[in-house]
Length: 206
Image (cartoon, rainbow, N blue to C red; front, side):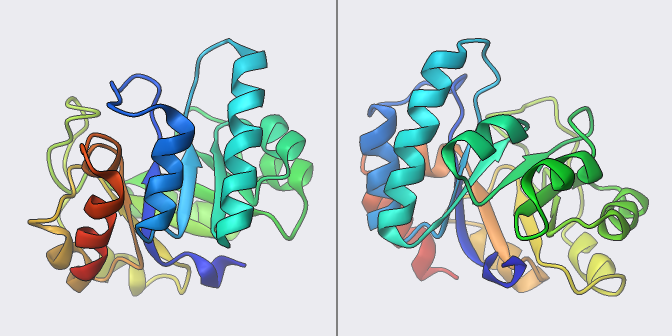
């Protein structure tokens, strides 16, 4: 399963204004070539989150894409997601793995921390995410990390490497060339007026 972490990785974000409703937006991203969708919504509206995640899981299954839930292994399990993504203050890799099983994808945010990446890999992570590689409109306070982090990480692990943060059509090729296996995007996809075309344009640069 971890070997499928490649290409465009589109992340929804409930905090970011969307010109299109969630389900049509994700459907458009999938038509445009997104291979992974992450549902990121840290609100407390459990019923809505369950309904949205369930709908997106179905869309991804129909498109043959992976569906990942951010920081909620129980929700991922409830909707049959392919896995979960955890950050610095989220559940431990081992806890997520114990709940979802050995076949599940467990992605980990490593920011610019190679020690954290090594610990996550040893704990059973499926992929490692690094960023913000550029200033991010979604998380403007996030510190940036150099693109050289991908070569440094590759020297330490064979796990798929994901880049995130401020990536757009102008810089995506540079990020891929630096060694990222998958490119995670929020605003460049879901902030676009034409989401399907935005994904096609981004994909053409990979």
